[in-house]
Image (cartoon, rainbow, N blue to C red; front, top):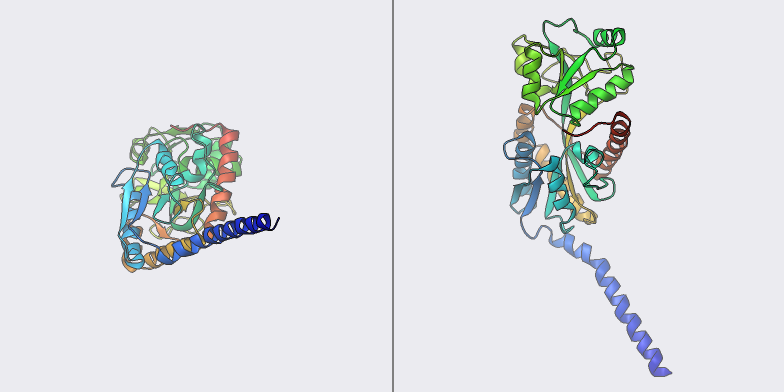
Amino acid sequence: MVSSVRALFRAASVCAAALLAFAAAPAAMAQTYPSKPVRILVGFAPGGAMDIVARTVGEKMSASLGQPVIVENRPGAASNIAIRLLIDSPPDGHTVMLVANGLAANPFLYTQQPFDPTRDVTPVSLVARLPVVIAANASSDLSTIAKLVEASKARPGSVGYATPGSGSTPHLAVELFARAAGISLTHVPYKGGAPAIADVLGGQLPLVAVNAVEVLPHVKAGKLRVLAALSAERVSTLPDTPTIAESGYPGFEASVWHAFIAPKGTPPAIVDTLNAAIHKALADPDVKERLVKLGAVASPTTPQELAALVRTEYERYGKLIREAGVKAN
């Protein structure tokens, strides 16, 4: 009997020690983090806006973390390939990913690759916002949002608009606006912003919705007129352009955003270290200047604030995509 009790005691002691070691592992990991180079996954090809943002911010993060920060491009399936790679990576902070709004919209657009961005990843920090604008050919009668709404209500579906693609952030943003305004617009998707803008310049369509930076040269040349910025604040490079709220639709806001996420289960202490490195990088004047050239505004947040943003976007994009039957290109 005594030997049995001793055996049970020894077994319990071993289990307790194992549990303590397991519980202490994240703390020990955080104390030595980072112990090797940090990898930033980007779901798009080199040279694009997200790649440039990742390299710009990653370069400054390296100085704070004391380890090289390497950008690894894994393009394909609207960044779903890279997201799956992140989800399957060890939650040790040595693999993170720079994502955009697709993180919230893709689960509804690509149902064959399901994931839940509110549960399957760890938010780290928002990085930047890129305002979306609605622009018209400068010779068009649609010179304001009020005139756009008036024309659309007079002849529902008669006004067409171009976007960089079906399911893109500009597409979803305009559809959300149309619902708020109670109008029906006809969407014409393109393979990117440049061809969409080209057809509006050529008069094939009256409107285009893209990132603000893409229309700037044409606005300066007098060929395009921006009706409104869909962002919460006016665009610094388009100071005379009203926001959508100033145009009569308060409470509505949509922009492209970039954010860092990590694998699910990444220890909070490591998330905090990454968050601090990102914030320090975004405070650097050189980084801010390079972001402005991309049409982006540095927008660092806490992990909790990013989590709230992702949940809100996930819910509103999901509702819109289901109800409107939006399909990816």
